Length: 134
Image (cartoon, rainbow, N blue to C red; front, top):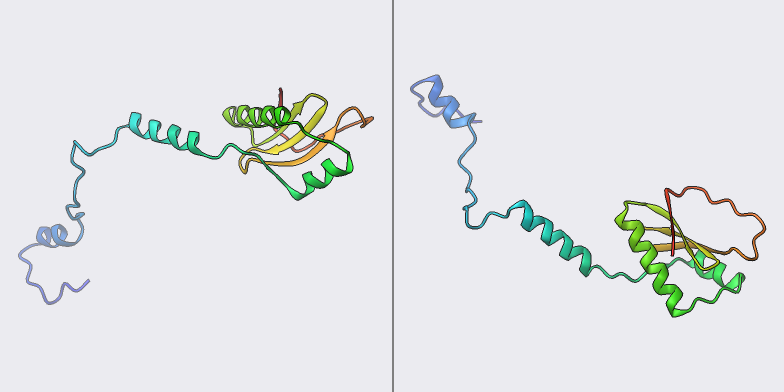
């Protein structure tokens, strides 16, 4: 701050000049967004997000190794299960479709791995915080 070259009449003049926030352009009442509008904008943005699940390379390898072929309806149910998990705030979900178990990272909308429950004698699933059965 360069206050040495300016003439000030009082300490109040100095504080008014340098310590009080400058008047910033205010938002006009007609242009202000209310909470309801922000909520609607967020909901619309979520609906417009691509709902297609991505399959990781690991998942593709596991599906091939385990001879798991998904029908279009199973993929659709898997997507619905991932959407339900997202609605409940689940981050890492176990989604069961028929006899196939999928681990889905809900935030990235990615299937991490897949297992056929009919061929596995014992299965332990860790690092999930929810399960969806569709």
